[in-house]
Image (cartoon, rainbow, N blue to C red):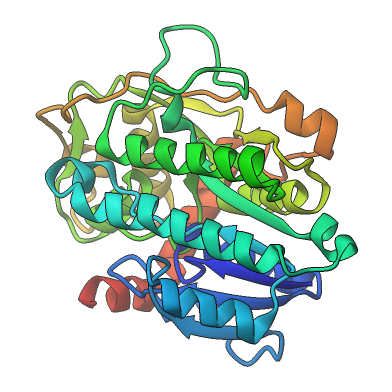
Length: 340
């Protein structure tokens, strides 16, 4: 299969590209290389004869149309997105342009290309939209997000992702385009840009900077390792039923403060501070984020039952330790992306 992977120079997309190459697929990477997209995330892959890189914008209609003509895709997987909630609060326009207009451009070019295929190739073609659990809003003390819940986005970021998901649904029901949507909980692991909770805490701690925690740190997130998520998306692409949605979670709910403290404890053990104090002393509490959702958690029993999804990282603390080890061993990567 020849598969277009948008945003594959980013955190989750690059993990998925590795997964595809390991399964002997031809991968076309489309990435705009914004601040969170880096060729460094594709290190070790650039010499692979099945990897092709194209720099461009998913919202550029002519550019996307040319890619379909040149590569004759068997599938499209859309990981490209503006994703940092804080940025969406302060600068929402970029989220509208990429997450909504970009998704529309990919969908409509997919539809036009798909309409020219033979009946057999039409049936095999897939458009897969990678979404987020944040489209479902927020949870109270109990319950989990699942595929049957209504959308209740609370931030410009989640609203833009929800709008994109609705477009995907409409293109399937109106035009018959074979689409699949996936929703995931918070990802962690190697190559995550140092703006999200886990990498920013690791990099700040190593640089003796404050570790800022929103509010009292009580907000709860469910954490899935990026490689487990990439595996789930691959199952949804190859086994999923068109028109369906599949959720992927880590079964690892943790309060944000607990995550930060776990990072500090891990660093205390393997990279102690020169002054002998715990990294936890760097924790500071800052004003809470506007509209900060209280709790996310995902029920991925549908994916387990229908796709055969299983997590490799069943213990969050083991995955976190491996993630900290990666950042310690890849200080050059961190410096390169931060300099950019």
